[in-house]
Every structure is written in structure tokens, then in C-alpha cells.
View 1: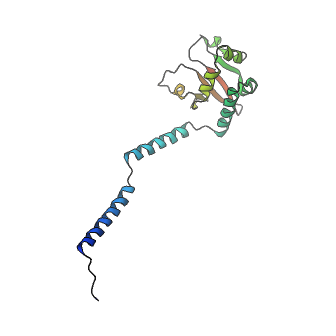
View 2 (view 1 turned 135 degrees about the horizontal axis):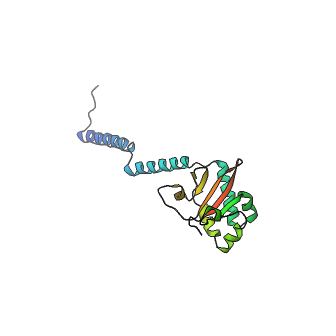
Length: 168
């Protein structure tokens, strides 16, 4: 038996085909810079989510509160608040407005849309509270706008404050 020889053109084509296959395999294993950026962004987001990880009962509480605020359901909202709920900052802590009168204050000052907006923000941990917007929890930012705070009271989440950062 004699060995079958391929014409030179066929050998060259096979070498090119093998080379292309090897290149394809090599490049599919490499991460492109944009893929690396996306992976890094996804990891950062995952870490932020874990860092700000809210417990399932907090998410459920926040979902109920958002629905109640959207419906202006004062009875449900009141059941989710602390009795000394803070709604207006005074010049001194003694002048802060707390407790009774919150719904009238929100109505008179048109604050329902502002409250909905703040409650739609991401909540992050600040001391013993979950607060929104996240800028309020960042000590590098001098945030003085509206903010909301929740905390555990007797094992249950409660809406503790919705105030503006400026006195008045």
C-alpha cells in the first residue's frame, strides 16, 4: 500500500482551518475589557446589595408601607409608625414635631409625593436604622433633604421618621 499524498493546496487549507479553530478557542476563553467591566459592576452591585442587605421582613414591611402611602391610607400607615413619629425638625430637638398631626402636616404641605419619592429610593443601613435615600447614610455627603427612617421596635419594623434636613 502506498501512502496517499494530499496536494499542497489541501495541506495549506487544513493548516489554515486548524489555525482558525485554535484562534477561535483561544479568543472565546478571553474576557474582553467591556465584559470585565460588566463583571466588576455586577460584583460591586452584588456587594452593595449584600452590604445593604435588607431582611425579607423589612422588604415586606416596606412594600406594605409604599402601597399604603400611595393610597394615602392613614390608618394603615399609622399602624406602621412609632407613637413618637418625627415629621418636622425644629430649631432645637424640643421644637421637633412628633406624633399627632403628621397626616394633616403632610396634606397642608403637599408632602405625599415627596414621601412616595423617598420611599421608592433604596434603603441602606445607618446605625440602628434603615434609611433612604442612600446619600443620607454617607458621611461624606452633607445631605439635608427629605429622608425616611425605619428601625426594629420590639422585634417588628416601624416607620420612625420622615423629615427634611433643614429646621423650620
